[in-house]
Length: 565
Ligand code: ATP
Ligand code: MG
Image (cartoon, rainbow, N blue to C red; front, top):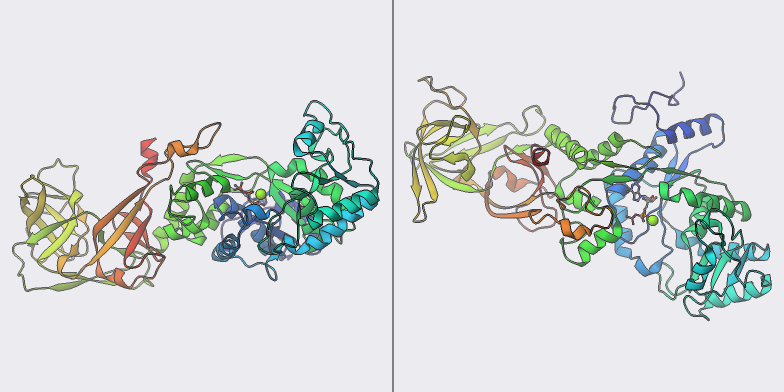
């Protein structure tokens, strides 16, 4: 039997059910079968001008995933051709995020800037062959000459200058002899072409900027088009996979490979980018949220960045699962963020240890329980996972329960603690409430209750059962913790659609900070980033940055937005 994947066997390494191959898998399968390529090489090419977001995760899972699946390799290559907006901080963050998602790149990370010498030689080559020229039109003039979708452009008056003159001018541009915007190097293709990208596109621009890798060596920087295909060719990338908006650039990608002495001939393929509702996935807009301090940073748990999701408690496994679920197609669409939330809920339900944490505590005094007595109950770490260690729950006369779990009076639907009624304390006794103690404002500050004897693990002997179960902690031996309740960052499903200003729909309730929460003691040993289900409250994780015990709500137990809609 062949161990090559066939058209229906797309089981991934996690043993997921088979699904049909998507169009890129079909292309690669065929290229390997026909020996058009011997080994698949892909690349993930971020520009280090921001942190990676969930859209990038799709591209990462696709490029690295294909390499894994077809026994190939994937490069992590920084497309660092625009020094104005790029920084080392982003390079480091991107490496961390790709690694965290569980992928390994081939060899060392690569930088487009390490090929700048070659690009320069290739630019000289194009000039000598009559395929490029230095143009002295200003950017505004060049725009006028370019024409429109309906009208052809006009040739630049500099188009026919001699190759030697262009070579000298390019040298001068490189050395910083001319001002930014005064000249550019352009390919000589066709000013009347229906595809505007082929109307003598700019290959090099003057930029007197210090670069994070090359310092002040260069005063000219290549455009995306004059860099990307050549980087792919130098690295031996076989399948250069990008998002649909680059489809119109493909003819130029191919033209350059055709006219340059490149070592290999990569091919470009386009797929539909990921758009998520209630979410903004544009680095520029995410940077604006950071710069204008609408969030605390790129890794704010409300940000759709990989660093933000990590800090919020999303797992790499859930993000990868989500990327698998949404599939790969040749058209753009909008994915419901509830799908991503479902993926994380599903993962944490299966894997997160359980714990009790009272978010809005009120005191319960058990009047029939001796003040000097304590007990310790054992609770499972997870209802279905024997491999997760059990927890010790101290018990005593004074407890905390959540204020929302007590009412003086209530109808039958309310299955929590009510005066004269019973409720089970999770993993402990059934109790019955007798009295509410109030302050001068009439707020309940304490509940007096009694335990029903012999009800730990048993029903009451008098046959009067408890209707519901609530969580609790023992006042004498619990932890003071801070809890951040995060919700979606935007209230509008399409925050940046059309001409909307995405800042107008920032959710004012995207963060609620609880300073007085009380948690069971087992959480003292939790590791940063560790995830939990706080029983009856949701999924939380220990913050990986804050000092002390701070927990971030990853996601509620159920989708509360579905009801709001
Ligand atoms: P942004 O629009 O957020 O600035 P970008 O495309 O400019 O994103 P790059 O750093 O150039 O950011 O992206 C690196 C790779 O990730 C590219 O190959 C790009 O096609 C891919 N990518 C970016 N956004 C998405 C998305 N929403 N869905 C899928 N792939 C994406
Ligand atoms: Mg880009």
